[in-house]
Image (cartoon, rainbow, N blue to C red):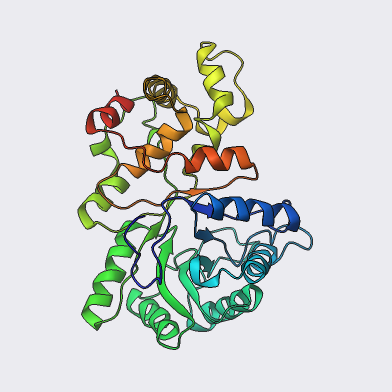
Length: 323
């Protein structure tokens, strides 16, 4: 088990379970079965959001409500960490600018508490930043909800590191608790995307990773498995000299990621594990705490991901992934 995140009541499992489709595209019965399997495998950290499935007919609040029903039916409230997110932009907004005024955050928070059927949320994320709003004001808002018992701790999702750092500096100046973690888009595959994706990016050239190394702030990344880029389907594709690209290859495919996939396969075969486990082990082997969020409806995939816990990569093996 990892060290407890600041403000939470129990130690979080190293693999966090995401829940975008819980209670909507994944039925209530299947969601309950998946959550049971996750708990049995040693998981206790569940991530949801106020906005999940809001784009589906009858989807609004489905994830939070289903998780809350499962927690009550199993009597596990004191042994799980529930994280949810608020302040998401309106669904029809052109720009991803958060709604971080106190009244807006409070409205989302109260709705989430009602859906979950809980008095307190363990970790509350601001889903997006509102860059023109002073960070000191935002921290005061969140601390007010902490002091009145509606949340235990708070974090930032989809914020720039500069704004997180400014917020935590402001919190220190005010004598208030800071953001306890960052929830960004990050994975082994993410480091190779973009204009420089044809080059073999060294870890030291990954600014997000370097900031976390410097600050030591825990990271809870979504898209931790690079949309399945290191999964079995793409492993077969790589072993076929990258002929006939599967659909899962498209969003993360680049020359650098093809090399990274091949290196992950090589290391996995040496260790007797899967390439996807190597991709997760890369995150778990950082010099700062990382709690990857996985999204799945498959029990086999869940077991595979949980099997990455305890699998450590040496500095040499991490470096080999970037060669």
